[in-house]
Length: 228
Image (cartoon, rainbow, N blue to C red):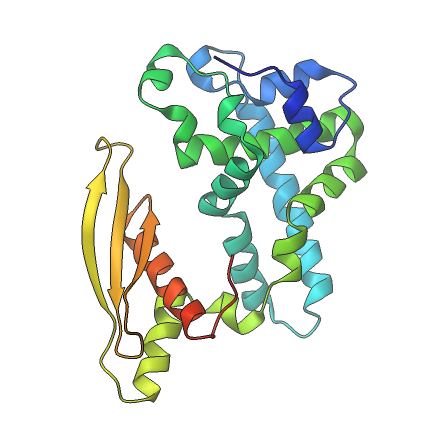
């Protein structure tokens, strides 16, 4: 059952003048022709611009390629899906019967699209400054915690380079299990390295993502990366 929108409006921090825009932003195309795809298109453009401007102002010495990679990391679907889960959007999505049965409210792509659609809906409801403020609020901690070196190198690369610099064996990644249907799988990875007595673990919607999470956990244990 879809939850009433009052809880979500409170989490979003935006007092909609036209609540039908929020309802539309939460409506997946599986429900019919009236869906959130156009709002998603608009929100994607706004998100990319706001994050680009924020990075431009934060890293004044960064080159264009570095800024592009930072932005790509922040606006990618995996990051947006995490944000959607933080907001609990899955409880409010309007999905067709097929998507409901297949667990669409948990799928990264659907969750990520809903965040972009909400950004677009706020822009239409209250204008550019409101949508910009919303994006910056969503990303406040992520922007504050950004470290150029940490962000531009993925966790597996950083862990491998750290071990190589000490002439130690490379990390060993082992797939522990896979859960879920073929279209909606969750991968569980174990990472063993010489510097840690106990392995670290990672979970993700792909084997690559789970390996990255296990490597990141190892970096945290080694004091080479922040939690979260």
